[in-house]
Length: 396
Image 1 (cartoon, rainbow, N blue to C red):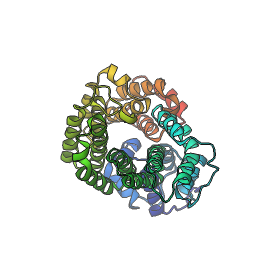
Image 2 (cartoon, one colour; image 1 turned 120 degrees about the horizontal axis):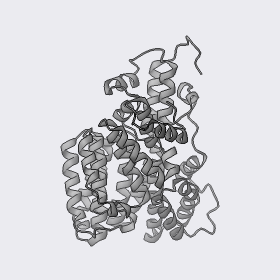
Image 3 (cartoon, rainbow, N blue to C red; image 1 turned 180 degrees about the vertical axis):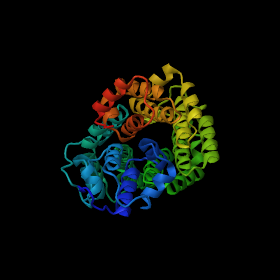
Protein backbone atom coordinates (compact mmCIF):
# COMPACT_ATOMS: atom_id res chain seq x y z
CA UNK A 1 0.00 0.00 0.00
CA UNK A 2 1.53 3.37 -0.94
CA UNK A 3 2.01 6.00 1.74
CA UNK A 4 1.54 9.73 1.25
CA UNK A 5 4.32 11.08 -0.90
CA UNK A 6 5.39 7.65 -2.17
CA UNK A 7 6.08 7.42 -5.87
CA UNK A 8 4.24 4.61 -7.67
CA UNK A 9 5.67 3.37 -10.95
CA UNK A 10 3.12 4.84 -13.38
CA UNK A 11 4.00 2.45 -16.22
CA UNK A 12 3.65 -0.53 -13.85
CA UNK A 13 0.26 0.67 -12.55
CA UNK A 14 -0.95 1.44 -16.06
CA UNK A 15 0.05 -1.99 -17.34
CA UNK A 16 -1.56 -3.68 -14.35
CA UNK A 17 -4.81 -1.79 -14.94
CA UNK A 18 -4.67 -2.73 -18.63
CA UNK A 19 -4.19 -6.42 -17.82
CA UNK A 20 -7.00 -6.46 -15.26
CA UNK A 21 -9.33 -4.62 -17.61
CA UNK A 22 -8.70 -7.12 -20.39
CA UNK A 23 -9.13 -10.09 -18.05
CA UNK A 24 -12.60 -8.76 -17.22
CA UNK A 25 -13.57 -8.26 -20.85
CA UNK A 26 -13.79 -4.47 -20.45
CA UNK A 27 -12.88 -2.10 -23.25
CA UNK A 28 -10.93 1.12 -22.68
CA UNK A 29 -14.12 3.01 -23.48
CA UNK A 30 -16.02 1.11 -20.77
CA UNK A 31 -13.30 1.86 -18.22
CA UNK A 32 -13.34 5.53 -19.23
CA UNK A 33 -17.09 5.74 -18.66
CA UNK A 34 -16.84 4.01 -15.28
CA UNK A 35 -14.16 6.48 -14.18
CA UNK A 36 -15.90 9.50 -15.74
CA UNK A 37 -12.73 10.06 -17.77
CA UNK A 38 -12.10 10.47 -21.48
CA UNK A 39 -10.95 7.63 -23.73
CA UNK A 40 -7.63 9.44 -24.49
CA UNK A 41 -7.04 9.74 -20.73
CA UNK A 42 -7.44 5.98 -20.22
CA UNK A 43 -5.16 5.22 -23.15
CA UNK A 44 -2.52 7.56 -21.76
CA UNK A 45 -2.86 6.18 -18.24
CA UNK A 46 -2.45 2.57 -19.37
CA UNK A 47 0.60 3.62 -21.40
CA UNK A 48 2.11 5.23 -18.30
CA UNK A 49 1.85 8.79 -19.51
CA UNK A 50 -0.59 10.48 -17.12
CA UNK A 51 0.96 10.94 -13.69
CA UNK A 52 3.78 9.47 -11.65
CA UNK A 53 1.91 9.53 -8.32
CA UNK A 54 -1.79 8.66 -8.83
CA UNK A 55 -4.06 10.03 -6.11
CA UNK A 56 -5.32 7.44 -3.65
CA UNK A 57 -8.90 8.42 -4.55
CA UNK A 58 -8.23 7.47 -8.18
CA UNK A 59 -6.62 4.18 -7.16
CA UNK A 60 -9.64 3.35 -4.99
CA UNK A 61 -11.97 4.15 -7.89
CA UNK A 62 -9.92 1.93 -10.21
CA UNK A 63 -9.95 -0.93 -7.69
CA UNK A 64 -13.73 -0.65 -7.28
CA UNK A 65 -14.34 -0.53 -11.02
CA UNK A 66 -12.09 -3.55 -11.63
CA UNK A 67 -13.54 -5.41 -8.61
CA UNK A 68 -10.16 -6.04 -6.95
CA UNK A 69 -8.72 -5.12 -3.54
CA UNK A 70 -6.69 -1.93 -3.62
CA UNK A 71 -3.64 -3.91 -2.48
CA UNK A 72 -3.72 -5.99 -5.67
CA UNK A 73 -3.74 -2.85 -7.79
CA UNK A 74 -0.67 -1.27 -6.20
CA UNK A 75 1.25 -4.42 -5.26
CA UNK A 76 3.25 -6.26 -7.92
CA UNK A 77 2.27 -9.68 -6.55
CA UNK A 78 0.02 -11.74 -8.87
CA UNK A 79 -3.70 -11.24 -8.27
CA UNK A 80 -5.28 -14.01 -6.23
CA UNK A 81 -7.43 -16.18 -8.44
CA UNK A 82 -10.66 -17.79 -7.35
CA UNK A 83 -9.70 -21.25 -6.06
CA UNK A 84 -12.14 -23.08 -8.30
CA UNK A 85 -11.18 -21.12 -11.42
CA UNK A 86 -7.54 -21.97 -10.74
CA UNK A 87 -8.52 -25.65 -10.42
CA UNK A 88 -10.23 -25.57 -13.82
CA UNK A 89 -7.20 -23.95 -15.42
CA UNK A 90 -4.93 -26.56 -13.85
CA UNK A 91 -7.10 -29.36 -15.20
CA UNK A 92 -6.94 -27.84 -18.69
CA UNK A 93 -3.17 -27.43 -18.68
CA UNK A 94 -2.14 -30.57 -16.79
CA UNK A 95 -0.64 -33.42 -18.88
CA UNK A 96 -2.50 -35.97 -16.72
CA UNK A 97 -5.71 -35.94 -14.64
CA UNK A 98 -5.61 -33.72 -11.54
CA UNK A 99 -8.58 -35.41 -9.85
CA UNK A 100 -10.19 -38.86 -9.61
CA UNK A 101 -12.42 -39.21 -12.71
CA UNK A 102 -14.12 -42.39 -11.51
CA UNK A 103 -17.89 -42.50 -11.43
CA UNK A 104 -18.59 -39.40 -13.51
CA UNK A 105 -21.22 -39.63 -16.25
CA UNK A 106 -19.71 -37.13 -18.71
CA UNK A 107 -22.80 -36.76 -20.89
CA UNK A 108 -25.16 -36.27 -17.97
CA UNK A 109 -22.88 -33.92 -16.07
CA UNK A 110 -22.05 -31.86 -19.17
CA UNK A 111 -25.76 -31.43 -19.85
CA UNK A 112 -26.21 -30.31 -16.25
CA UNK A 113 -23.27 -27.92 -16.60
CA UNK A 114 -24.73 -26.21 -19.67
CA UNK A 115 -28.09 -25.86 -17.93
CA UNK A 116 -26.39 -24.34 -14.87
CA UNK A 117 -24.46 -21.89 -17.05
CA UNK A 118 -27.58 -20.68 -18.80
CA UNK A 119 -29.32 -20.35 -15.44
CA UNK A 120 -26.54 -18.01 -14.34
CA UNK A 121 -25.06 -20.45 -11.82
CA UNK A 122 -21.52 -19.97 -13.14
CA UNK A 123 -19.74 -20.93 -9.94
CA UNK A 124 -21.61 -24.26 -9.92
CA UNK A 125 -20.19 -24.94 -13.37
CA UNK A 126 -16.66 -24.06 -12.26
CA UNK A 127 -16.92 -26.55 -9.39
CA UNK A 128 -18.04 -29.26 -11.81
CA UNK A 129 -15.51 -28.73 -14.59
CA UNK A 130 -12.21 -30.18 -13.24
CA UNK A 131 -13.55 -33.72 -12.84
CA UNK A 132 -15.45 -33.44 -16.14
CA UNK A 133 -12.26 -32.46 -17.97
CA UNK A 134 -10.29 -35.24 -16.31
CA UNK A 135 -12.97 -37.87 -17.00
CA UNK A 136 -13.31 -36.95 -20.67
CA UNK A 137 -9.55 -36.98 -21.16
CA UNK A 138 -9.12 -40.28 -19.32
CA UNK A 139 -11.64 -41.84 -21.70
CA UNK A 140 -9.78 -40.57 -24.76
CA UNK A 141 -7.60 -43.20 -26.45
CA UNK A 142 -5.53 -43.66 -29.57
CA UNK A 143 -8.51 -44.94 -31.56
CA UNK A 144 -9.92 -41.43 -31.77
CA UNK A 145 -13.44 -42.56 -30.82
CA UNK A 146 -15.67 -39.75 -32.21
CA UNK A 147 -18.09 -40.01 -29.28
CA UNK A 148 -15.32 -39.42 -26.74
CA UNK A 149 -13.77 -36.61 -28.76
CA UNK A 150 -17.20 -34.96 -29.02
CA UNK A 151 -17.64 -35.22 -25.26
CA UNK A 152 -14.29 -33.58 -24.63
CA UNK A 153 -15.04 -30.83 -27.15
CA UNK A 154 -18.34 -30.11 -25.39
CA UNK A 155 -16.65 -30.02 -21.97
CA UNK A 156 -13.93 -27.65 -23.20
CA UNK A 157 -16.56 -25.45 -24.87
CA UNK A 158 -18.38 -25.20 -21.53
CA UNK A 159 -15.09 -24.38 -19.78
CA UNK A 160 -14.32 -21.68 -22.36
CA UNK A 161 -17.57 -19.76 -22.00
CA UNK A 162 -17.60 -20.10 -18.21
CA UNK A 163 -14.02 -18.98 -17.61
CA UNK A 164 -14.43 -16.07 -20.02
CA UNK A 165 -17.64 -15.03 -18.29
CA UNK A 166 -15.83 -15.04 -14.93
CA UNK A 167 -12.95 -12.93 -16.25
CA UNK A 168 -10.31 -15.63 -16.80
CA UNK A 169 -10.06 -14.85 -20.50
CA UNK A 170 -6.70 -16.59 -21.02
CA UNK A 171 -8.08 -19.78 -19.49
CA UNK A 172 -11.13 -19.39 -21.69
CA UNK A 173 -8.88 -19.04 -24.73
CA UNK A 174 -7.02 -22.26 -23.85
CA UNK A 175 -10.29 -24.15 -23.37
CA UNK A 176 -11.84 -22.76 -26.56
CA UNK A 177 -8.77 -23.69 -28.58
CA UNK A 178 -8.88 -27.25 -27.27
CA UNK A 179 -12.61 -27.51 -27.92
CA UNK A 180 -12.07 -26.41 -31.51
CA UNK A 181 -9.20 -28.87 -32.01
CA UNK A 182 -11.27 -31.82 -30.70
CA UNK A 183 -14.34 -30.89 -32.73
CA UNK A 184 -12.26 -30.66 -35.90
CA UNK A 185 -10.83 -34.12 -35.20
CA UNK A 186 -14.37 -35.51 -35.07
CA UNK A 187 -15.31 -33.80 -38.33
CA UNK A 188 -18.65 -32.56 -36.98
CA UNK A 189 -19.35 -29.15 -38.58
CA UNK A 190 -21.91 -28.18 -35.93
CA UNK A 191 -19.48 -29.06 -33.15
CA UNK A 192 -16.73 -27.10 -34.90
CA UNK A 193 -18.91 -24.01 -35.23
CA UNK A 194 -20.06 -24.10 -31.62
CA UNK A 195 -16.49 -24.59 -30.40
CA UNK A 196 -15.27 -21.82 -32.67
CA UNK A 197 -17.74 -19.30 -31.30
CA UNK A 198 -16.56 -19.97 -27.74
CA UNK A 199 -12.94 -19.52 -28.87
CA UNK A 200 -13.80 -16.24 -30.61
CA UNK A 201 -15.55 -15.00 -27.47
CA UNK A 202 -12.56 -15.80 -25.24
CA UNK A 203 -9.83 -14.56 -27.58
CA UNK A 204 -11.63 -11.28 -28.19
CA UNK A 205 -12.06 -10.77 -24.45
CA UNK A 206 -8.27 -11.03 -24.00
CA UNK A 207 -7.87 -8.00 -26.24
CA UNK A 208 -6.97 -9.94 -29.41
CA UNK A 209 -10.13 -9.34 -31.40
CA UNK A 210 -8.09 -9.61 -34.59
CA UNK A 211 -7.38 -13.27 -33.83
CA UNK A 212 -10.97 -13.83 -32.79
CA UNK A 213 -12.32 -12.36 -36.02
CA UNK A 214 -9.88 -14.49 -38.00
CA UNK A 215 -11.11 -17.69 -36.30
CA UNK A 216 -14.71 -16.74 -37.06
CA UNK A 217 -14.05 -15.89 -40.69
CA UNK A 218 -12.12 -19.11 -41.33
CA UNK A 219 -14.89 -21.17 -39.73
CA UNK A 220 -17.57 -19.45 -41.80
CA UNK A 221 -15.60 -19.86 -45.03
CA UNK A 222 -14.75 -23.52 -44.39
CA UNK A 223 -17.96 -24.82 -42.85
CA UNK A 224 -20.61 -22.26 -43.81
CA UNK A 225 -21.86 -24.00 -46.97
CA UNK A 226 -22.29 -27.33 -45.16
CA UNK A 227 -23.89 -25.79 -42.08
CA UNK A 228 -26.36 -23.84 -44.19
CA UNK A 229 -28.08 -27.03 -45.33
CA UNK A 230 -28.19 -28.77 -41.92
CA UNK A 231 -31.58 -27.34 -40.92
CA UNK A 232 -32.04 -25.70 -37.52
CA UNK A 233 -28.88 -27.17 -35.97
CA UNK A 234 -26.58 -25.98 -38.73
CA UNK A 235 -28.18 -22.54 -38.97
CA UNK A 236 -28.01 -22.08 -35.19
CA UNK A 237 -24.33 -23.02 -34.99
CA UNK A 238 -23.43 -20.87 -38.00
CA UNK A 239 -25.49 -18.00 -36.64
CA UNK A 240 -23.65 -18.08 -33.32
CA UNK A 241 -20.30 -17.82 -35.12
CA UNK A 242 -21.64 -14.75 -36.93
CA UNK A 243 -22.76 -13.14 -33.67
CA UNK A 244 -19.35 -13.67 -32.08
CA UNK A 245 -17.69 -12.40 -35.27
CA UNK A 246 -19.75 -9.21 -34.98
CA UNK A 247 -18.60 -8.89 -31.35
CA UNK A 248 -14.97 -9.16 -32.49
CA UNK A 249 -15.49 -6.67 -35.34
CA UNK A 250 -17.01 -4.18 -32.89
CA UNK A 251 -14.02 -4.59 -30.57
CA UNK A 252 -11.86 -3.60 -33.55
CA UNK A 253 -14.13 -0.56 -34.15
CA UNK A 254 -15.09 -1.96 -37.56
CA UNK A 255 -18.66 -0.68 -37.40
CA UNK A 256 -19.67 -1.39 -40.99
CA UNK A 257 -18.37 -4.96 -40.86
CA UNK A 258 -20.07 -5.61 -37.51
CA UNK A 259 -23.37 -4.31 -38.90
CA UNK A 260 -23.09 -6.46 -42.03
CA UNK A 261 -22.37 -9.57 -39.94
CA UNK A 262 -25.38 -8.90 -37.71
CA UNK A 263 -27.58 -8.64 -40.81
CA UNK A 264 -26.32 -12.03 -42.00
CA UNK A 265 -27.04 -13.49 -38.57
CA UNK A 266 -30.57 -12.08 -38.81
CA UNK A 267 -31.03 -13.81 -42.18
CA UNK A 268 -29.87 -17.11 -40.69
CA UNK A 269 -32.18 -16.69 -37.68
CA UNK A 270 -35.14 -16.34 -40.03
CA UNK A 271 -34.60 -20.01 -40.88
CA UNK A 272 -35.13 -21.26 -37.31
CA UNK A 273 -38.18 -21.25 -35.05
CA UNK A 274 -38.87 -17.97 -33.17
CA UNK A 275 -38.14 -19.70 -29.85
CA UNK A 276 -35.33 -21.96 -31.11
CA UNK A 277 -32.69 -22.97 -28.58
CA UNK A 278 -30.65 -25.65 -30.35
CA UNK A 279 -28.07 -27.08 -27.92
CA UNK A 280 -28.80 -24.20 -25.54
CA UNK A 281 -27.48 -21.58 -27.97
CA UNK A 282 -30.60 -19.40 -27.65
CA UNK A 283 -30.01 -18.63 -31.33
CA UNK A 284 -33.16 -17.06 -32.75
CA UNK A 285 -34.31 -13.65 -33.93
CA UNK A 286 -34.66 -12.39 -30.36
CA UNK A 287 -31.09 -13.29 -29.49
CA UNK A 288 -29.84 -11.59 -32.66
CA UNK A 289 -31.55 -8.41 -31.50
CA UNK A 290 -29.98 -8.83 -28.06
CA UNK A 291 -26.53 -9.09 -29.64
CA UNK A 292 -27.26 -6.14 -31.93
CA UNK A 293 -28.08 -3.95 -28.92
CA UNK A 294 -24.89 -5.02 -27.16
CA UNK A 295 -22.68 -4.52 -30.21
CA UNK A 296 -24.14 -1.08 -30.97
CA UNK A 297 -23.24 -0.15 -27.41
CA UNK A 298 -19.70 -1.46 -27.92
CA UNK A 299 -19.47 0.80 -30.96
CA UNK A 300 -20.54 3.82 -28.93
CA UNK A 301 -23.92 4.11 -30.67
CA UNK A 302 -25.82 4.22 -27.40
CA UNK A 303 -29.14 5.63 -28.62
CA UNK A 304 -29.28 3.01 -31.39
CA UNK A 305 -28.46 0.31 -28.83
CA UNK A 306 -31.34 1.41 -26.62
CA UNK A 307 -33.67 1.51 -29.65
CA UNK A 308 -32.69 -2.06 -30.55
CA UNK A 309 -33.42 -3.14 -26.98
CA UNK A 310 -36.90 -1.61 -27.07
CA UNK A 311 -37.73 -3.70 -30.15
CA UNK A 312 -37.38 -6.94 -28.17
CA UNK A 313 -40.81 -8.35 -27.34
CA UNK A 314 -41.16 -8.86 -23.56
CA UNK A 315 -42.50 -12.41 -23.92
CA UNK A 316 -39.67 -13.38 -26.28
CA UNK A 317 -37.12 -11.83 -23.93
CA UNK A 318 -38.55 -13.74 -20.96
CA UNK A 319 -38.10 -16.98 -22.90
CA UNK A 320 -34.33 -16.44 -23.18
CA UNK A 321 -31.99 -18.04 -20.67
CA UNK A 322 -31.29 -16.10 -17.48
CA UNK A 323 -27.65 -15.72 -18.53
CA UNK A 324 -28.73 -14.00 -21.76
CA UNK A 325 -31.28 -11.80 -19.97
CA UNK A 326 -28.76 -10.69 -17.35
CA UNK A 327 -26.07 -9.93 -19.91
CA UNK A 328 -28.51 -7.93 -22.04
CA UNK A 329 -29.90 -5.86 -19.16
CA UNK A 330 -26.40 -4.93 -17.99
CA UNK A 331 -25.29 -4.03 -21.51
CA UNK A 332 -28.38 -1.88 -22.04
CA UNK A 333 -27.93 -0.23 -18.65
CA UNK A 334 -24.38 0.63 -19.73
CA UNK A 335 -25.70 2.22 -22.94
CA UNK A 336 -28.37 4.16 -21.03
CA UNK A 337 -25.80 5.49 -18.58
CA UNK A 338 -23.53 6.63 -21.39
CA UNK A 339 -26.43 8.13 -23.29
CA UNK A 340 -27.11 10.36 -20.28
CA UNK A 341 -30.14 8.53 -18.90
CA UNK A 342 -29.10 7.36 -15.41
CA UNK A 343 -32.72 6.71 -14.41
CA UNK A 344 -33.13 4.12 -17.17
CA UNK A 345 -29.74 2.61 -16.33
CA UNK A 346 -30.68 2.15 -12.68
CA UNK A 347 -34.09 0.73 -13.61
CA UNK A 348 -32.45 -1.88 -15.84
CA UNK A 349 -29.90 -2.84 -13.20
CA UNK A 350 -32.63 -3.27 -10.58
CA UNK A 351 -34.65 -5.38 -13.03
CA UNK A 352 -31.58 -7.57 -13.57
CA UNK A 353 -30.99 -7.81 -9.83
CA UNK A 354 -34.53 -9.08 -9.26
CA UNK A 355 -33.85 -11.86 -11.74
CA UNK A 356 -30.22 -12.64 -10.88
CA UNK A 357 -29.16 -10.93 -7.66
CA UNK A 358 -25.94 -12.85 -7.06
CA UNK A 359 -24.39 -12.14 -10.46
CA UNK A 360 -25.52 -8.53 -10.67
CA UNK A 361 -23.80 -7.88 -7.35
CA UNK A 362 -20.57 -9.70 -8.21
CA UNK A 363 -20.11 -9.61 -12.01
CA UNK A 364 -17.46 -7.09 -13.12
CA UNK A 365 -19.49 -5.48 -15.98
CA UNK A 366 -22.53 -4.80 -13.77
CA UNK A 367 -20.32 -3.40 -11.02
CA UNK A 368 -18.65 -1.16 -13.60
CA UNK A 369 -22.02 0.35 -14.57
CA UNK A 370 -22.88 0.91 -10.91
CA UNK A 371 -19.52 2.63 -10.39
CA UNK A 372 -20.12 4.82 -13.46
CA UNK A 373 -23.51 5.90 -12.10
CA UNK A 374 -21.94 6.80 -8.76
CA UNK A 375 -19.14 8.76 -10.43
CA UNK A 376 -21.25 10.58 -13.01
CA UNK A 377 -24.74 11.96 -13.36
CA UNK A 378 -26.89 10.35 -10.68
CA UNK A 379 -30.45 9.06 -11.15
CA UNK A 380 -33.31 10.90 -9.45
CA UNK A 381 -33.68 8.06 -6.95
CA UNK A 382 -30.17 8.33 -5.57
CA UNK A 383 -31.15 6.37 -2.47
CA UNK A 384 -31.89 3.23 -4.52
CA UNK A 385 -28.60 3.60 -6.40
CA UNK A 386 -26.65 3.87 -3.14
CA UNK A 387 -28.51 0.84 -1.76
CA UNK A 388 -27.68 -1.19 -4.90
CA UNK A 389 -24.05 -0.09 -4.70
CA UNK A 390 -23.89 -1.18 -1.06
CA UNK A 391 -25.30 -4.61 -1.92
CA UNK A 392 -22.71 -4.95 -4.70
CA UNK A 393 -19.87 -3.68 -2.54
CA UNK A 394 -19.20 -0.76 -4.89
CA UNK A 395 -18.00 2.40 -3.17
CA UNK A 396 -18.55 5.94 -4.35
